[in-house]
Length: 205
Image (cartoon, rainbow, N blue to C red):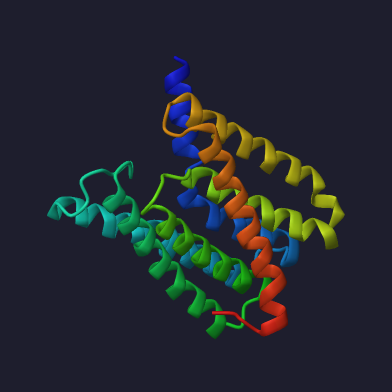
């Protein structure tokens, strides 16, 4: 019963959804309302960060290039991370062409960098991608909370969910505790550093 619960948590709180969740939060905080342009951004975000990577990885699975959809082996893991990075990079260029808010562009930049770091680390160890994603999402909400203190409650919820997904990964023996903590730290620090560095050097996609 507990295994089934934690498996459900791992699926529902999968890192592939964190970019879209982050965009929902950014739009809710910075661009409240129901403008068609907001829905278009979210639709394209989901397309480029969820649908396209999943379709491409599924196709690679059919061809036999990816033999583990749970990304337990090195080749499948690196392949999936690189595919996601390329797809999200394309979405970042769309945001730039649309003159989207800089916070959105910086977030996407940070996600691409985080994915590439995770792909590099995958050659040596298996850091938790779940907590990398939730660490990055926590960084976004904490960044926004400085100028919008009213979302502090949301920050607490995100931290709680990050802890929950980390607990699930350890309980299911998918990762050791240090891999979960390291994943959260990598996601959090990389996104925060992106928010700090990008405005200084103008480094956006």
